Every structure is written in C-alpha cells, then in structure tokens.
Amino acid sequence: MMLFLDAVRHFFSKTTSAVLGVAVGAAVLVGGVSFEAKAADDTPFFTGVWELNDGNNLRPLVMSDWLIFDGKMPRIWLYKRQGSVPGSSYQFYARNVGVNGLSKARVDVAMIDEYHMAYQLSADGAILEKGTARRLSVPNADGSCLAVDTNMKDLQGRWQVVGSGKRKEMISLSDTSLTFDKQKIAVQTRLLRTGQIAIMANGAPYAMLTDAGGDYAVLQILQQGTPAFTGGPIGHLLSFSKEVVVRRPNGRCDAAIAKRLKFMGKPVKRK
Image 1 (tube, rainbow, N blue to C red):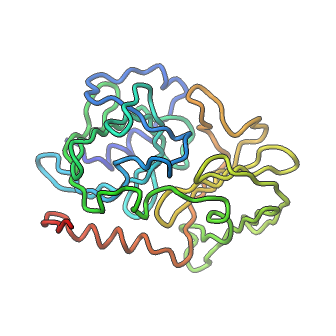
Image 2: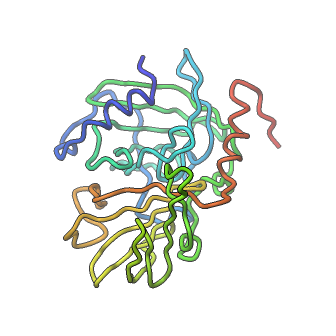
C-alpha cells in the first residue's frame, strides 16, 4: 500500500477542473465539515494530533479544522462534501496548498469513540490508505492549539514567511495596510469568518489571510479580476495567484505537537 504522503504528492500534483464530476468508488465513510462556518463554534473531532495505524505501520497524522499537516507544515486543504453527519463523520474534497484546483484525492474520517477515528484516503475509486487513528492530543478538540478560533486582531500583525531562511522575510497586516514581498499597499479588511480575513485593495478583492491552525496561516493572493471571496462549484475559491505559508514568530504549537508525537507507539495517560 502506498504511504499517505507519497500518495498525496502524486495525486495532488495532478489537478483538474473537471474533478467535481469524478465519483470516488468504495468510499465507505460519509459526512462533511463546514469550512464556511465559524470553526470555533464546533471544532471538529478530528482536530488534533493522531497516530495512524494501517495494520502494517504507524505514522503521525496532524489535522487542524481545515488542513492536514505534512511534518510541521500545513499542506492539504479540506473542503466539505455533501452528506454531512455533524460530529460523527466527514468527507472531504482536497487541494494541496500552492496547487490550483481540486485533486482527485478524497479524505474521509469517522469518529469511533473519544480517542479513535477511522481514516481513509482514496482517489478514482482506489483506496490508497485506510486505518484507525489513535488520538495523542487532548480529547477536547476546542482546547487544541490546532483549533481555528482566531479573530481579526489575532490574525493581524507580523508573520514570518516559511522557507525564507536566514532572511526571515516577513509579512504584516493591519486594518489599513498589507506589507508583503517588500511592498506596502493600502487595503481594507473585514472578517469573512472566524479564522479568515478578506483583504481589499483599490475597492476590489485582493487576498485572504487564513488561519491554518497551530502556529501557521496562509496568505492567499487572488488572481487578477477575481470578483468575490467565495464562489465556484463548491462555494470556495480554488485557484490563486500565490499561496504563502507564514508562521507566527515565537509560536508554541509546533513544540506542543512534537511533544505529543513522542507518544507514538506508547500508552497515553488520560486524565
């Protein structure tokens, strides 16, 4: 069986505008989580740090309300599909950060109990990975540092561009200005939903800053002429001029995740 991250890199490198018409066979879990709703109102059960057992191997699985992480980095956007069973099971379209258009991959999770969930990755009817995940983090997902519960002020300020190395390239957002790529532009901002800011420039949609969970956010620069911050077949923008992962300086969630992952393959003490 292909390992999850290899499978994701393979399928997410092949985007298609017709993916919404592709039916995924053998999908055994149904449901959905509302990317459009306020995440903090009901942080989904899958948010947190997990150990995934596919019957042969154990691997880490780290999820925020809206993304799957690859190592420390937020990597895969999750978009709900129809058939939601709130608090029970969720089925997602998926898209790799920085890649325009949905992937053929589908991600499905279903709650077994407070500490376990079923997990499946599939594409074009083929199951690429399937197993049971054991929670390593706190069972109250609302208390996880991966939960998306930020407002305007939480998202404003300075962020470091991930991958900028010793240069420590920064972005900065306020009510009236965005500094990015060594340029400062006048903007107007408003909260689209908990965890996401809409950024207007010259009266037109320009960008979004979206909380990725943990210490991270994603600055999404819209394609020129994009008329609105939402839209398309699934209600979300799926193509951008640029997506930049940024990290809050002195963030503490990376360390908390690493601490939880030390319990891989070991008993976890529960209060």
